[in-house]
Image (cartoon, rainbow, N blue to C red; front, side):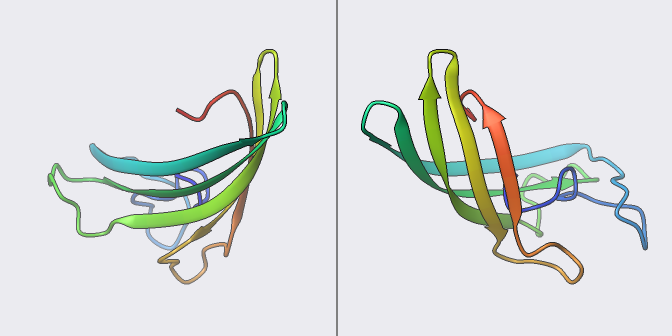
Length: 106
């Protein structure tokens, strides 16, 4: 989920940032993509979700991240650069995250 560090949306061991893992996940994303010229594009997005240790159908700790990015379209797929911020950041969490990828996110 963009806006949060890798695997830190769900439960972690007490007093650490080591992920415990979970048994249930709820996730959703909304993304607006706009292409400019032949090879460039931009994106604005909102991601929301939660990983929980219980099987509750609607977790009570939904995490939301929002951000923007650029795309450079190549013959093998887009090169993505996204910057995202957590909407409901907890104490000690980073204020933003940077993501680089190849191909479509979904």
